Image (tube, rainbow, N blue to C red; front, side, top):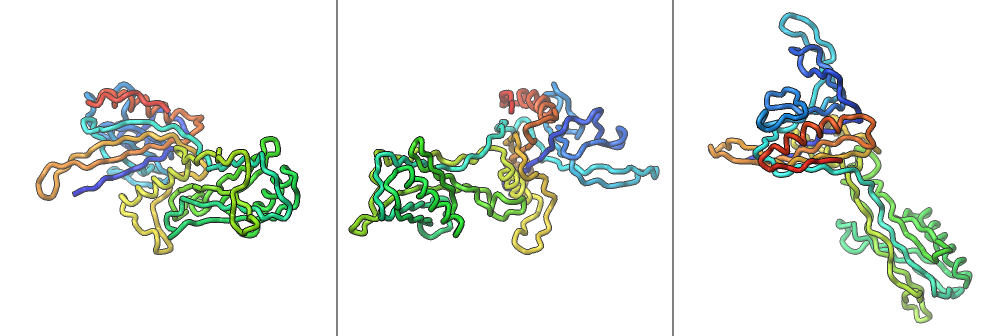
Length: 346
């Protein structure tokens, strides 16, 4: 049987090629690198206004940077014909969902602790213990601890010195967060860092993830016991991290996963030879997501269906009109499908 198949087409910030031609029979092919085009069941370019009555199946293609030369039957050379990536067929009667996702920036997690109301005691050791909850591979709780011996009973002086101790600890052995002190609000703010193993390059092995943490503030009492700081509030007013939508790390991971359906499964035997990666580092993307089923005849002679996911990613902010042109075709077609899908905008 067939399994779920995911495909992603990644465009560039360009406008539609004027008088677009795909095939030699129609003239000189001029599909651009990164151009996204919707085709009908006969692999002809669709235009805005066409419905399922015109074509019950559509395809979406992406122009690539790879070109090749060939000679036709009469020996005429055709130069720089562009290879394009083609989606699986999208059958209108079997579309389950159609939606658009606008780019949203990721935000790292913060922990904000108010120290108002406490009186620092000179000579007392104060401790920050941060527990990380994002490291599933760790057999227990992974923690990082910073210690500071108070040298001033003045609250702002103590707060600044405590954060300086955190910064110094980060310089000696990398912490997974940064720290800042605000004298105006008497707050210590911890901000999670991006994880370098998954946010550095297109070739990162690890999937995109973010630091999740819980901070606890103690001082060492005369008995040796760790005791919570005596402040007017012990609530953490920080905010959880948000992965965002359409970041380059997410699009890279979607593309990396989809390569498995093209037969690329080697990620550990180096040097790794893999298909071209179309994600551009530091770019941001709007996404179009289509969920559908594909009918097929199985080896045991039964009519079956397999789920397909087709994703189109186009960079933002956009100076080109490519997304507008693609939506003009797809919105009308999807509205005419049995699912009567709502208009999508990004």
